Length: 73
Image 1 (tube, rainbow, N blue to C red):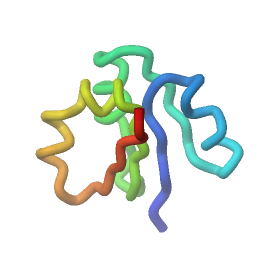
Image 2: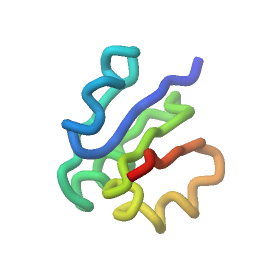
Image 3: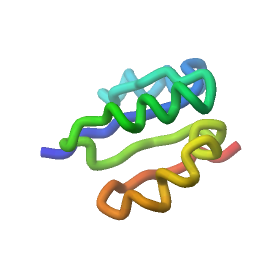
């Protein structure tokens, strides 16, 4: 079964934890990349803050089997 994970600034993602989403705080581009690379194969959807998505542009274009979405600014 697939799981959902959110990556980005902790204050923007707090509410997702209440819905059962795994939240990985990433305050900068380096942390966002490390979080992305550490994701389990079971993760089917990744919710990204705009800052995390910006830092992961290259990784996102080369990950066709993982669904991701960027939160609005």
